[in-house]
Length: 330
Ligand SMILES: C[C@H](OP(=O)(O)OC[C@@H](O)[C@@H](O)[C@@H](O)CN1c2cc(O)ccc2Cc2c1[nH]c(=O)[nH]c2=O)C(=O)N[C@@H](CCC(=O)N[C@@H](CCC(=O)O)C(=O)O)C(=O)O
Ligand SMILES: CCCCCC(=O)CC
Image (tube, rainbow, N blue to C red; front, side, top):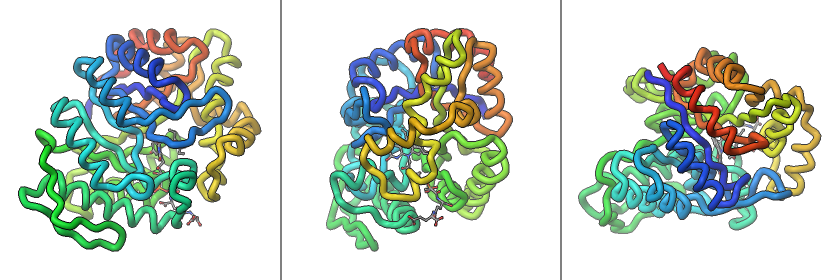
């Protein structure tokens, strides 16, 4: 499958206006896709933002010409009702045919707890995500009003009048082995987050493919997308510290426990050793080093990159891809 290079325009790290300028610039440089985080609270406290992703996507699609857009990712089970998620992405796809997808996953405490007070177990949230997808697809596809009584969601003669022009590609986020298998069973494509290449190659992708095969799908037609942060600067240490904003994602307890206060996440992020950032994210001083970093994950099986730009000079971190994209796209 052809490798695609996507730009992650972070609405947690940048103002919506700055993220929009980045998206426009990234498309001109040659990125294939643009992805936006869908958050209520951000992964850091100082200088953070948290604009609403769907509102931003409407503006960004209109301001660009051909790049594919998706959230990265939307949790369709607690603060959002899956029927409204389905309606939103049907509307965007109807207006921008071929350019809109949606990525879904089982959520993060920082987005759901502050506005719902609810935080079910991982297993229950995964179960809810699977049911949410069923609701979304029924609304997208049904030619008749839908009545549905699931374990979590209900539809009562619900009809989606503005349908997507064609199928909305659905990326399903799987980080753990069970999540990855569910992604293969219920998603069109895999979405995951930076992990050791050996884990991606030996656990995440095989589990995803196992799930796809069990559901009667052909895994070779399904993308393996991954969000990863990068930072480029001629001063290597500055490049590494550029990625600090996202260091909280490297702390396992952020997922295991109900942490939803960005100040607390930031305290943990600031304790992450710089070597951990170097190992898990991309830190580079020039295009050649970035190409090597991307190749490392291509070799592990990733074929759609969502690259979060944490470079000290953000525009330089986009422009350097004029040299990188032709070298890594096959
Ligand atoms: C926690 C793991 O679950 P999994 O279903 O695999 O993955 C969850 C993620 O998909 C979500 O948290 C997702 O919402 C995160 N996310 C995101 C994901 C992604 O791939 C790309 C970008 C983003 C950005 C983003 C996200 N979320 C948003 O709301 N907004 C965003 O913009 C996992 O490890 N699962 C394991 C099982 C783990 C387990 O059972 N652990 C505990 C039990 C703890 C408990 O019940 O509370 C245990 O070990 O005891 C698995 O195998 O699936
Ligand atoms: C390891 C999971 C990280 C999730 C990242 C996220 O929410 C940032 C957009």
